[in-house]
Image (cartoon, rainbow, N blue to C red; front, side):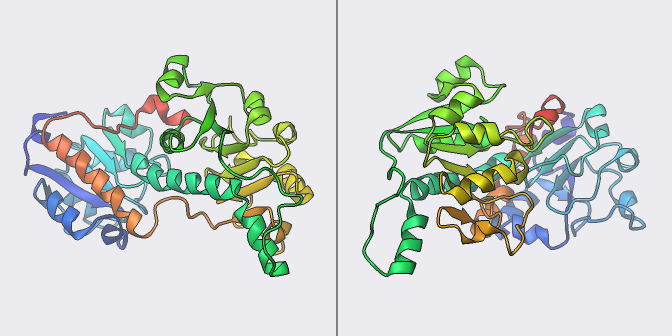
Amino acid sequence: MTTNLQHAGIIKAAFVMGLSNLPTLFSTEDLARLRGIVTLLDPEPVSDFTVPGTLERLGDVELLITGWGAPPIDAFVLDHLPRLRCIIHAAGTVKTFLSPEVYARGIQVSSSAAANAVPVAEFTFAAIVMGLKRARRFSEQLRITGASRNTAGFPAIGTNGVTIGLVGASRVGRQVIGLLKNLDARVLVYDPYLTAVEAAELGVEAVGLDQLCALSDVVSIHAPDIAETRGIIGAQQLALMKDGTLVINTARGALIDAAALTSELVSGRLDAYLDVTDPEPLPAGSVLHTLPNVVLTPHIAGAMGNEIHRLGSHAVMEVRRLSEGLPLAYPVLAADLARIA
């Protein structure tokens, strides 16, 4: 990092995102903090680099603070930003708008994916507790009968002493592991990149995928949507699951074989909390909308409402680290792009 990024108040920066997303991502307080650290070269967020005069105004920019709706940053744009040294993304993935040329030119990148992982992990933890309490089944029973609870024919109820399997030791997966320490549960993790040392440090057991599916009372998906993971939970893995296993997906719908999962859920053998589906959204006539063992939500696990400002606060923290000459706390490295969301 060059010296002109190491002293507070003189970093030349610009916001690059959809015009309406600045107040959504950044609180008034965080915007004030940013303005105490950087000099903004453009008063408004840049949402289109092709607007005449835009790239010329940004010729001296050293830092781009990006967010939802950021336009592509490619070789053409970078040719006009010769002093750019860092991109801090106040949202999750950077793969949708950053060209590999960014890394080829040695530009540092950070994202707020870790901040977005917090509500996803909280949602997952809540789904585990409510799912194993069989709340959806009881709710539907009460709606139909108006009677007191009846557990006849229900799967095992409760979280005490259960085995929870996590597919992916991602940022979200690791946040979930932390929350699961509140339960009396055995935690299994399948992740080909998780070492035995890391598993021991996390207090989990690293196992194969089929073993995880066969042993777990809950199987929760926390892997990225990449070629190697699409359909990772297929008919074979679903068949290995015990009757009453709770399947939770807050990652991407394509990671589970949709037809095979639907068949298992229609049979009533498994329960599911699905925040993502394949396709997304499901057709209105999908049988999954009618099942008492399925909870469907419209992709709400990630940051929403007052959770979104956490992303902006995270980005401000990274900008402050730059201003103090410190390394980025949450770098996104070129070597990791192929295996992260």
